[in-house]
Image (tube, rainbow, N blue to C red; front, side, top):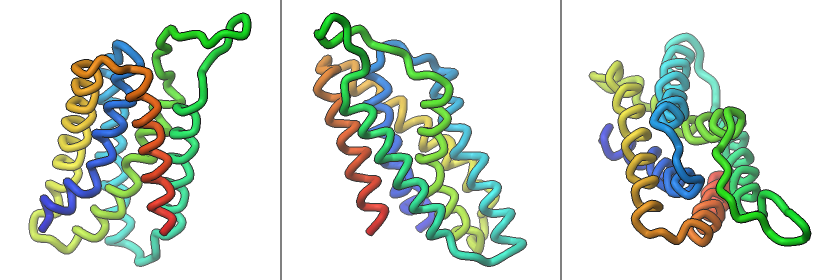
Length: 169
């Protein structure tokens, strides 16, 4: 049950990896930085769960909003030069990677809080980190293999919007 929950809350990392793969050469350090939130937030959620009991609806809504904003940003053109679209890939900045890491890891934090009662709950943050990193790396590789960077990027960004809207339901 624990592995199924971890994979379910980590699948959006694959779509994010596809979107990141279209930016060109995102370094491993960037993937590790984004994935680190999948370790930090679950640890914090598990600590808070052990101390307090409160609902996480507001956290889910915040995550959905961030995913929608990032998706809209990816669907819209980045730059304009002389009335024409500028097609050069831009590397995502630290602010973008931080927001992406936070939005991807909010559902993992909620999942970790639910898994707090499991016998091997201490392994959950490590497994979540590995799942997010692996799926983002797989998504990045998928984007490179398909070589449809512009179309895939917009489709992946649209998928982020869709995932964000579904979280509101």
